[in-house]
Amino acid sequence: MFYYKGAFRETDNFIYFKSEVPLVQHDVILFGERTYFIESVEKEFLLLERVGSIVTVSV
Image 1 (cartoon, one colour):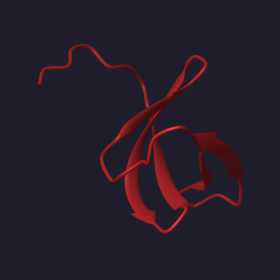
Image 2 (cartoon, helix red, strand yellow; image 1 turned 60 degrees about the vertical axis):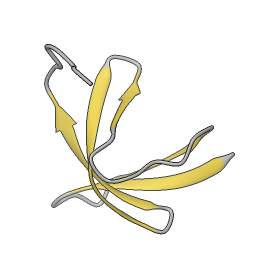
Image 3 (spheres, one colour; image 1 turned 180 degrees about the vertical axis):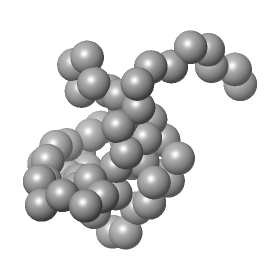
């Protein structure tokens, strides 16, 4: 289990969460109806940006 602390630019708000997989830069994470893009990862600290919606994903 991986434990993370996330923050948003220009705010003092933090979120704490755990993940079963390691998270890396440019991953997208979902919390309920909210979607976040990981701008950067430094150890267990993530810089997050809120995303409106994801239309399509291709691999």
